[in-house]
Image 1 (spheres, rainbow, N blue to C red):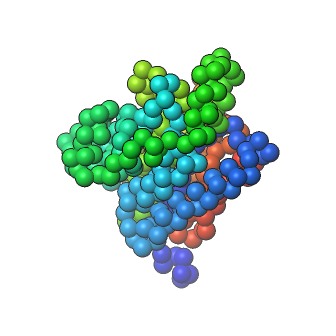
Image 2 (spheres, rainbow, N blue to C red):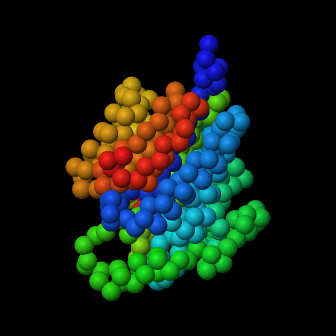
Length: 312
Ligand code: ASP
């Protein structure tokens, strides 16, 4: 028996958003910074999974790294609303129990994913929004952060550009950058987590798919775990994360076929974005219809694979 065969399988796949990232368009600094952030996040999850820790801890740990990294549109580095504020959304789901927690419009909590997990584990609810969600964080002693923690000069510049010309051609690299993680642990449980600042210049309390269980985030040990990124309005209407899970569980599709099938439906509808998936038997992967997607994967018998562009 080989050493690998003795090791119970584990898998982690993460994303840092899909969009119009192309070679030569993304600056060298953003390319390197994005890859370093993905590597740090996958390392955090790997440390937990390789020690036999839970998938839930692994996805939360990976997301916390990306939320604290200003390269990504989640936590610190989130995009601005039209009013010049930052409002974060996040969700987490446990495939073993179908327990889930989500928050939307959070403005004062450093790691929205940790707050989503607290909603799942320490409240009788699934989804809290706005000031109430931040209030729950304070009541649970979850770390807060002032507005300046979340704000970066580059995101402010992007907002100014959009406000100066709201009809300019849609640049998805500018508007997106959500982060997500899906994992299988050595006990055979899957988990999914997603966190985002949403869309640059969003108004009226707009919430996308990321924190909606079944749209941007879903996990079920009977099938797989899914996290999405892209134009949330399309992902919500297609119920992408749950439908991928249902295709695997009820129709017996592979995760590749289920993910490709939903991206084909998204494309047909006019939507752009991507998904990451880990199946309960340990296979992991992604599908996207944008030029690029920040993404990385590691398993019990393969070192981290990190990629941004569609051709790698
Ligand atoms: N899906 C996110 C939203 O619509 C955005 C993204 O993935 O970049 O809020």
